[in-house]
Image (cartoon, rainbow, N blue to C red; front, side):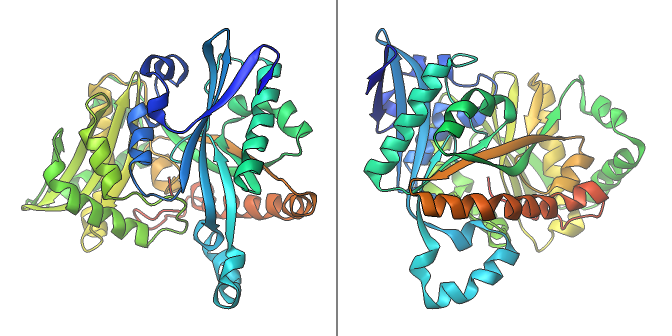
Length: 392
């Protein structure tokens, strides 16, 4: 496809894009946009049936890249909240095929959405890429198209092209981000408001009162991957939503990558792994990417909080400007000092009638789900430790 001097092609894998192109266009401070993460997704079976990279060139140079995730039969009952899942239970029993929807996700399945392009991308490029995305969805017979978890700033340049192509806009769960303007962990603690500071010190003392527990930071954790996966599955078994479920090949591929800095905050009870937080680093940014907990002792030992404190120590020591902890457990993360980062979806359906139904029903439903997910953060009512409202 060629228009306005741009030529669009679809590439089938991250290895089809030269590393220097990805480095030039991808967010420099977001580890979830490293090539290693996308390569690990492609080498695993975490949900999507396929991946593609919509690429625009001008004068022979790559000007923009939009990653795509293809779901031939996305299970709706796995990605909605518990209330909606209960309502869908009779349908799941009687007509399970109705709950399997062909869907195309645009952006990053595991992180914040971006169009990899100059800032801001010119309108003609946005129009071309939106049209090419819809054309790809038609060829692949994927009726629903979603630009997933884009911040308003990232979505605004695309908005005119999306609106003119029939997309409508929905709220999504916010991201969580902790600014790190401190030179030490003690300075970070001292800067917290009085109540969160007291709570943090109490949780650290609670952990330290159990001499059988210790936290180590590991560069090489290949020998622990089976235990990591088992603890991660304990968390996923309690998750409200399971759009993506990481597997052994994903963790193994990420560990084997030699370019991305990744460290495991590992908590042991004796020689037994009882909690972990996988931390990724790039530029001035860090991410607590995935967590695992042994719920046998997680609450009493305050494992959730203490692996997060260890990750904050790591990020401060690495000189990071911020660390993100994704769309989970908002109340404890606000207590850590995180900010909520607004995000949204743009969605459409290729056929007019389903599009009209989705436009009428989904905005109110997702707004209600967002209100429920952030209620504890807004009211100060505690959530269960380590409980996940969404999967990222």
